[in-house]
Length: 123
Image (cartoon, rainbow, N blue to C red; front, side, top):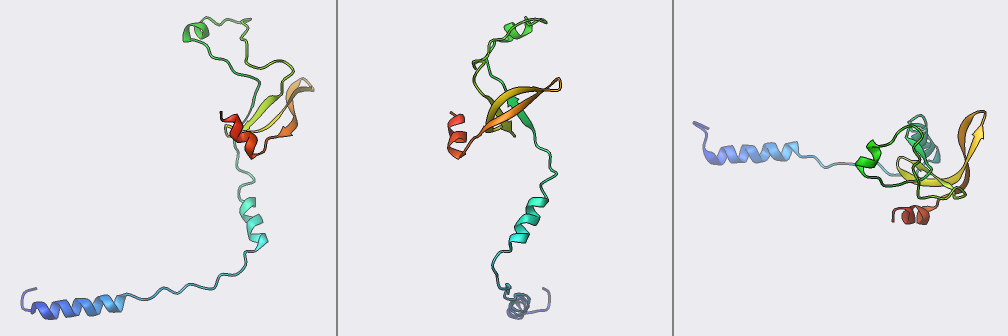
């Protein structure tokens, strides 16, 4: 600061700071447009997410897994007549039954799971 007195430096700094600070002005918020919401949804329509159909589950030791050979049978925790789970991004969203369509397996959705059902599936 050399030749400048400390009081003048402080005053110049205060004036500079006061000149640089300006109040922020925001525009008026209006009612949300429904078209804008649809436009936001349209941005996501081509996003790919993993979907899995879970027929059942089981737990096996590593030794049992390593002993598997073609023709091995693994017992699952669901009965044949029970619906299978449709999971989107790992979350249960629906249940249904396995169908065969032109030599390809498919899922016929029989129930959409509501929020309470999704919470129950986490237990």
